Picture 1 (cartoon, rainbow, N blue to C red):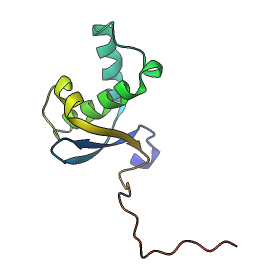
Picture 2 (picture 1 turned 180 degrees about the horizontal axis):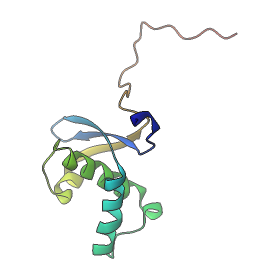
Picture 3 (picture 1 turned 60 degrees about the vertical axis):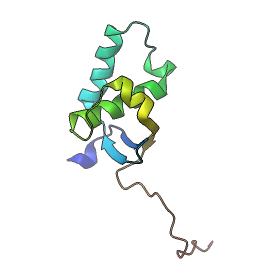
Picture 4 (picture 1 turned 90 degrees about the horizontal axis):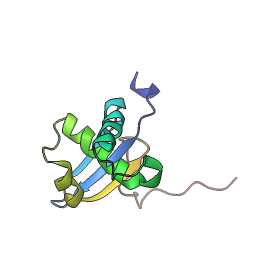
Length: 103
């Protein structure tokens, strides 16, 4: 079933060098919409995509008990929040692999 999901994956690196991979689900995206209603100064997703991505990642990591910190702390501790294609994110390229030959 998870192959059918199109919700985003994130790679998060915190200031203590921990790295997390997490997939946001509908509840994480809805949580952002609800939080925006409580914080009228927050911009819309299209106007602040990094804020939205950071919130999605934080909410998903909190929901899955991977982290336990308020969003304000997460914003300052997250060195990188990166949208990725899947949890099979390649962090290093194997230098012994040869490139494909052109046809």
